[in-house]
Image (tube, rainbow, N blue to C red; front, side, top):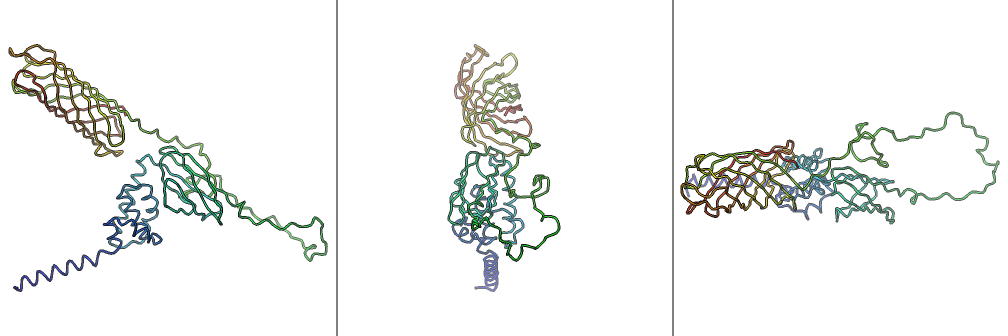
Length: 384
């Protein structure tokens, strides 16, 4: 073996060794999504935060939020610090964009052990704030062997709280005393001067006004200045499209022609939806040879990306059309036809605007021996 090869192998061995040394157990657990191993170590802050990042990779936002709380302030190993910190920020953005709701669980006394059916297998120590789906939730808390239970209903995009007071059951009653005053007691003649001791009471200002972050330590008070949560998005989209494109059937010169359409979507189970469309197009060559068509399309779509800033969807449809012409260039025109269509739509949720690119391929003949096809660029306005 030559000296050059020996040097290359030595360099490769050192590089692999350095890489293995840099990759710690938490980095390996994160790469392998080792939930069981990390849950066994979740009492350690670094392992807890890494477990939250794994749940985020698995798209389990409620558990990711539970374990990533305060992780931006935790001292993490270098091999996982960047990814865990980035994931914690991303999870906060995803929670704000989701339909999940915040639920603050507060107990008296604090440090009670609570369980929530929405987070099976998780043991919660109060007070704590968790993220849950909208609906009715039952919280079970235990203290000194006794069980306390309460139910709360939360709405989408909202914040709710539940308060369990076990203090009355934990107080030891004082021994009863006789109703007779005993003036022989040593302290009977003692005199205390001055005002009564101060009684600390909670401020009437909300935590938000006081700049306090975290769950309240008492019952949740209604904020008269709070705005109502945004309504849940409707499963139906309606819109209009204006556009144009290149139409070609092989029997006439390809031309740029206009199109007008009305479109609709119905979400069946996000990210899947049904899609329908009614359109008018002018197809064919010169103005004298053009053919007006009225088409109806139906199909399904898939939302590839759905964020508050942009939405991208792929749509496939079958289109049936009626053609308002009998013949062209002495060739008979089929009065009806069928077409396959594929479409890419880009929506901007902050505005009503939608842009689309659509391709249509005829399945039946427009004139004997020729099928039409089209590429359309469209701009639309949606009500969603």
